[in-house]
Each structure stands twice: as structure tokens, then as C-alpha cells.
Image (spheres, rainbow, N blue to C red):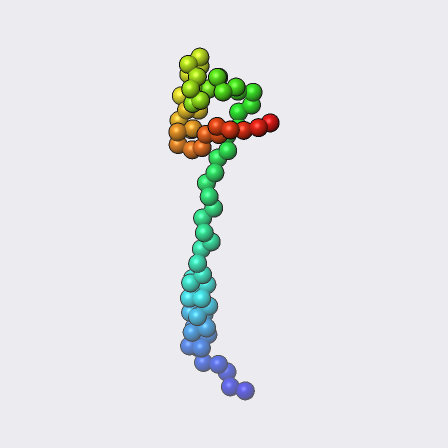
Length: 73
């Protein structure tokens, strides 16, 4: 039996390397942060129009994300 030529192994290695390098990366996962604060009435958070309390950090999160205006418990 004839031994394979040295370049055959190099071509095989190059083919495997190129095949592995061509795989596409998985799509990026969404970046979601869910902030749930408990026992806050609407009149306790200024994002809901409260003039009693100032909550600038919650207001900023509400302005840049989602603010639920209709929820049921």
C-alpha cells in the first residue's frame, strides 16, 4: 500500500480549518432587564405623575424602557 503524500494531510487540515471558520455565530441574545418593585402605589412613583415622591432613577428607567399603565393583580 502506498503511503499518502505529505501535502494530502495539509490540504485536509486546511479544509477542516476553513469549514470550521465559516460557521456563522449564533444570533446575539436580547439584553433584557426586568425591574419589579413591590408595594408601590401609582401615587408613590413620579413616573406615574406623583408629586409626593421624586423617583428620578425609576423615571429614567420608565422613559427608556416600558411603563405599565394598566395591570391587574
